[in-house]
Amino acid sequence: MNTDEIEFIYTALAECIARVGKAKTSLLLATLALDLLSQQSNADAALERILQAERLANI
Amino acid sequence: MASGDRETALTPAGTSHVPVVIAGGGPVGLSVAALLAHHGVSCLVLEADASWCEGSRAICLSRRSQEILGWVGADRPLTAKGLSWVGGRSYFRDTEVLHFEMPSEPAERFAPMVNIQQYYVEQYAHAAALRAGGVDMRWSTKLSAVRAHTSGVDVEFQSVDGHSHCVHTDWLVACDGGRSTVREQLGLQLEGTQYEGRYVIVDIEQNTRREVERLAWFDPPSNPGSTILMHRQPDNVWRIDYQVADHEDPMEAVKPENVLPRVQAHLDMIGESAPWKPLWISIYNAKCLTLPSYRHGRVLFAGDAAHLVPIFGVRGLNSGLDDAGNLAWKLALVLKGHASDTLLDSYSSERVLAARENIAYGAKSTEFMAPPHHGFALMREAALRLALVAPGVRSLINPRQTSPVEYVNSVLNQTEHGTAFAGGARPGMPAPEARLHTLQGLRHLTALFGTNFVALYFSRNQNLPRYIEQATASRSGPAALHVVRVADRGAADAGTVVDELGQAWRRYDAVQGTLYLIRPDGYVMGRWRESASAPDIDGLLKEALKERT
Image (cartoon, rainbow over all chains, first blue to last red; front, side, top):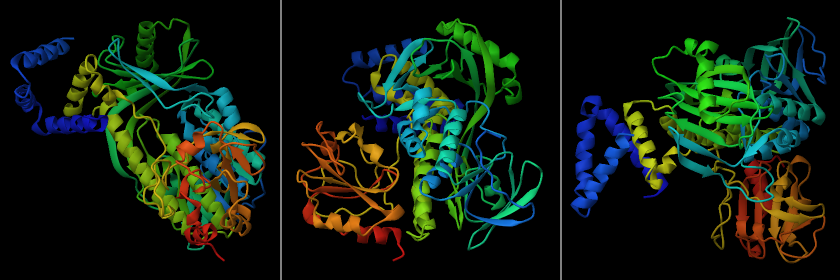
């Protein structure tokens, strides 16, 4: 994905979060994450992503 | 009043005539004045303040702005005084997450960016305007009424002694800033968006040896939750901008007792320990606003009077100077009878297009620097964390610094025919830079621009083809065509520059016989890859300018 495309999806997701509202943000992001994780090549790769996100969230 | 000003007598109640009145003696108004003066057009400049501005205000000048200030005659003091830079760093807390560099090459004419206080730019542009002659500069002079007619504009103003005056002008150029009196007098409204997020702007004086670059911290330990920007300026001055929390009262936020501890905490964090003192404190919120048109009969708008863009990406003064560079040659040609006033419609359409592009980039930067809602705030938190481990997302943190705008579909752009170019600059794009051997030694190609139309003819043969000689012979005065042959080897002469480094031939995608027609503001107007095209240059200029024959 090039820089313009990354910027585009960043804005699209930010606007989507605003549309669903704070109460449903976690549900939105969990649904999105599960969808994307299910497209990983195997469970180990998906788990690696989950643990990385956990580490970054706890910084 | 600054020294050296020249005033012509105006009777208190009388009506005088001047070709051009410029409302506003800031950097844009003074640049328009100087550029018009170089074209032999006199003007009267009305400025409400007593002298150059207070506070550093717009401090980052792009390479393009430096070129325009070169045409003004203000580039030498500017580059001597200013601090040049090429890149910057962004930190999440205390870890670097982005290091960017703008395009730069050895021995370039101007750095990608130079930092300098706005009052110096005003001072240098003012001095250049006075040197050029024909500029009547009035400080402490408040514009009070504007009456626009089809044949000109009546402008009423109050001079420093309290007397009222009225002048009739052919053209009024409104460069009177974000709260433009001219705009208000004409009942015009800016259109667009204002953002809520506020930034405090602080200048402090402190000695430092730190490299000159743009520095940004997100959620720094010194000011948790805030965003801080730092730029060095001349005279040992730091510009510090920091984001104010949404719940803070703006009036409270700018009080020294609230500002100084935050500054001290951040200086401590980055290890700047020399004694310091505050010089100037202000507050700012991002605006993306423009007039839909910059021409209203005989009134023309430029700079902040025409558009307001967010500070992130430094597109405010830089786009104002581009307005000045675009407008001055067109207005001069109209006033000197070499073009129809419809040429000024292209000023409006080109610069409104530029403002809309600047606003689009500025809005993107603002969404990151001052997130307008929960969605952008959360995404920024995610992007900054992910940037620690995923280089692919670091571009999201890039400040999207100003760059010249392409005038897509401008009426002045000449349609390309014949053999296609594989590269180079299309009509509507700024003409590329190159270092060339001239009679005066190694010089930069862009130094040829800023006054007349320029024909760049790429050829190994000394003789110019007849169609180019005919075009130059039939044009004169402000509408003259200056022909420069760009050879790839041999010796330079009065009409020939030599591209020994091969930069010009490569950057213009030239072959034997390639011709580029460059506008006085350094934009490509037309190009023809092979001389077999033999365009009627004089004819197309006449048509484009709607010249009176």
